[in-house]
Length: 97
Image 1: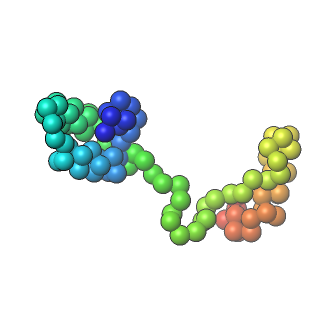
Image 2: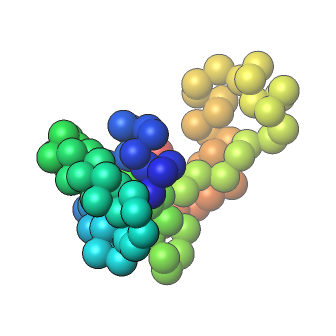
């Protein structure tokens, strides 16, 4: 709770759900203040997806492997990088990546 409330960049359905659950189980002398802080945070939270997982939970669809080591890669022009990436990941070659 404190992490999310201290950083306004946390948003989305997952964050909202976790803060609502947290609010429902708060106990102690400061619980009222903490619930109010959560309500305020949620009311000011921007609309939209917020956090989006890069991994689909099943396979590596859409991921691109590194081509060579970072030093060699930084010296490659765009065409060479694209060519080497296609050699390394056939799925990306089909997608035109």
